[in-house]
Image (cartoon, rainbow, N blue to C red; front, side, top):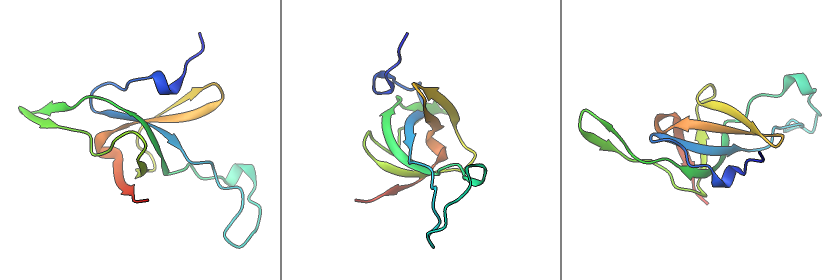
Length: 100
């Protein structure tokens, strides 16, 4: 079965993010070896799960599809679909929205 990430709806409390491409060159123009690549911490929200409830209080997603975000370095769960890695992140793993 071939999965299309744009057809996935995260469970309540989660968002699906497509991380930015990994950096292969430093700011000074030096090419970085493959084993030194850091995990990206920014990406684009593809889809958003429903609100969750905590002690009867509704907690809605802080982001919407299409938002560019920065998220926790070690947050979320990696999922590989058709050779591309995506992140399922909890609402609280989102640190900031990057304004256009």
